[in-house]
Image (cartoon, rainbow, N blue to C red; front, side, top):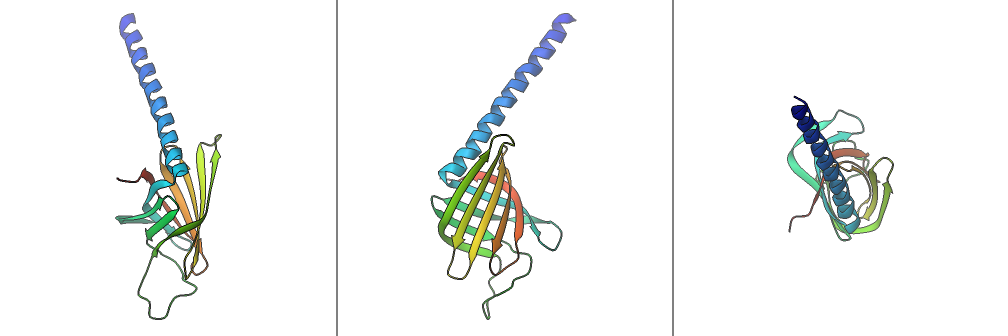
Length: 159
């Protein structure tokens, strides 16, 4: 019986050690992706300033590839200004990042990223808070629309 208990505890100690190593490697991987400017944020849900959370069933993302940022995200909320006759909805752009700032909080094990993108019609400020597991929240504010928040995951770019 003592031998069984010993094996039982040894198994759980080994499993816990492997899980801790996996968490550390995932944290480093997410941090490396963000610092290398080679990642994709895939949105799973969107929360407008005035409204409830909406779960997304299609694939929407924000891709950072070097200094180029490409967004294809839905927008729910109020637009303060729009182009006459425009039927284009959502947040869509493919531009160079004007600024890209990273702040790592070791205590909370969080990575904060601030990106500013200027297009011909608008300025977007993107704030991403990512955890060690890859789950992240993103807030986008612009001059022409209400702020909107997204929840999703950060992944590496596909080759």
